[in-house]
Each structure stands twice: as structure tokens, then as C-alpha cells.
Image (cartoon, rainbow, N blue to C red):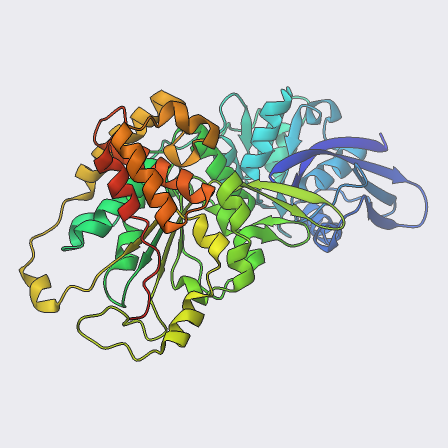
Length: 503
């Protein structure tokens, strides 16, 4: 048989589009041609496949004109994921393996020159796409990738360490390859404890509210007040991920080659450096790759030294904060990635950092403070739910303070509040649509009066008004109240103070 067909998949954003690898052997001048919009990495597979077959003791049709077509032709192909399909297609076209048994598999894998199989990116995306398509094929992957794909229930995932193992299994009387098994989810351990932070009752309360409702949080304060420590303890307060959310988060990380099986089912915590570009934050490139906001899916994105980020990078976060997704448009194609993350940011109040510090005088002029804080645009700040101040605690007082409340106790209250919100409306309070606030955030008369007066006096936009209302709904959930009282609204208003001004 001079023509063989192998099924595989190419990464197209977060999707894994089906690809048919067609291998044709013909008489003529010896050549090895790969067509079908293949990039350099895919075309280099010719040398890897040739060496892998020869070093494995298999016959390579060196005297044939070899044509490999990756269909559809208009879909970009990248990476070394097509090494294994090409090698198997050559062997099937040359009559060395059973083509009928090969048709029952979808496969991907990079080959070493010795024929060993190496893992590829996006194994979870492949498994999810195959399950969604309802295909009857089994998935054949290298061991590390097969362990990822096995997390998707309802699929048969086979693993192989060497090309010879695959060839032996695809003989007419060959034994089936071993089936990959999913690792059990490990309990999240070793997270920083909130008890390590002494004092700071107000910021701790804001952190609890942010965790309970999924709200974004900006902390301002002089250096060394504990802003970064507070942010690092937020993942330990969040409820455990559900199976669907855990799988979605793992799929994005797998797409970027950053998924760790040891952290399966745990919320990601991403903390990019302030030199990150807008492409690094929201994604991009050619072909498009997910950025930090997508890699932090259902987790925490911590931006320290917020005003030091590029203005364009921060402005690019505005739409994902509202919609929970990012659509990357390029001249050739588009890619959409999920971006449902919880933003936590920290910043100093001024360039020297000591505005409002009772221990050190600020040496910045009002113009310098205004320019520094002006790096954050009004529309960006308008999309933040909580803006709080983290005050300075003198070292002498800090030593005498008792150990704070443990993360486990706070996490228990957060879980109860989140359960109330999910039972009532199906989503966390931060995702509650504006048109549903009237039904799920009922205000008592006095609370309504307070909220209306505060909005008028502080000049809130409609977006700010709704965000304060969502925070008040979370405060009420923590208190176990069905309606929003004056105390709940007052606390929500207090946690949206705005940036400190120069004296």
C-alpha cells in the first residue's frame, strides 16, 4: 500500500482541530516533502523521523518519493507533535504495520533520534476535543502527555515510550498498549498561612471579602506593610476548584506547556514581573498563545508594583476584567481564550513610597504624586472592586501583637459564603450581572438611602455603583443575611476609598 492516513490534532487557540496526516510513497527521485501550511518545526520532522526509523531497526523508504500532506491545508501546524503520525504513516504506507489497526487511533508525539517518544503541548486540549467530537478513536501519546489526557473522563488513552512499542502493538497479532491512568487530585498543601501576618485587621477583612465574592483587590501602602504577603495568602482562602473548572485551568496551562500534574486541581497563582508586555499579559503572538490572564484561569493574578507596568498592558486588562475572556485578533486568524481570573494588585502611594507613613516623611511633591498615580487610568480603577490602604505598623507594636487568625478558619467562612451565592444565583457575586442585582441584592430602605447618597457625593459611575453593590452582597453573605443592611453597605463603601492624596 503506497498511501496511508493517520489521525492527529493541531492546536488552534484553546481548541484542538482534527488533522489528517496523509503519507504517499511514489516512484521517482528520492525526496521527503511536507505540505499543508507546516512551520519550520514541522518540516524538521523529516530528519527526526528518518533517524528514528533507522536507529530503531525499521525500514525507511529512502528510494521513494515521499509526500506528507497535513490536511486541512489552511490550518497552521506547529511543534513536533506530528513526528509520530508521520513515522506511523510511513510504516503503514510501506506495509510494516497494520493500517486497519492504525485507523483506530489519534496520535501525537515528538520523536528523538533514537525513537523515544517525548511529550507535547496541549494533550488536555486534544483529549477534550476528542471527547467533544464523540470520536471512537483511542488517543495514543507519550507517557507524560498521556497522564495529562487521562484526566478527561470517558476516553481510552494509550501510552508508549518508544516507537518500537507502537509498531509492536500495531501488528496484526500485537498486544494492546498500556492504558494511561489519571493521578488522584492531591490536597493543596504548603500554602502560606494568614496567621503569619500580625495586625492588619482591615486588609485581612478585605482579603476575606475578596475571596468570598471573587472580587478584584488593590492594596496601597508604604513598602514593607505586608501587601505581597497578603496577596500570596489569597489562594489558601479560596474554595477548592470544581472538576470542570480544574480541567479548564489545566487545559490552558497544558497549552502553554506549563501544566504540572502535582498541582492538578489547584488554583493557579501567577505573579508576572512589572516589565511584562501587554502580549505577555493578555496573550498574542503568531500563532496566538495564552497570556498570564488566561494562565491564571480560576486562580489569582497578582500584579505587584502596579504603576510600574506599561500603561498599554494595564489598559489591555480592562475588557477581560469585565467579560472573563480575551479575543486575540490578527491579520491571519483569531483565537479566543478564557480569562476568568481574580486580580490582586499592590502599589506604593507615591514614588518614594512613604506617603502616609508615620515613621518616615514623604519627599515627593504633589505633582510627582499626581503623575505617579496617574499611571493608572480612571477606567482601569473603575473596574476594581476593592481599593484599600495597608497602614504601617511600628516594629515595636508589631512584636507585641498576637498571632492572627489561621487561613483554615477564614477559608471555612469563605466557603459558606460562596455556597450561599452559588445556591442563590449560580455564580460568584463578582460575576453577578447588573440586571440580576435587583433580584439577588435586595437593599433595606436605610441601606438604599446610604448607597444613593454615597454614590452622589463620591461621583460614582454606574459601574462603580454596581461593584459596590456586589461587594455589599458578599459582606451580607459572610454575615448570613438575605438582605443588605446599612452595615453591609457601609463596609463595602469603606473598602472602596480610592488612592491616597498628597497633603
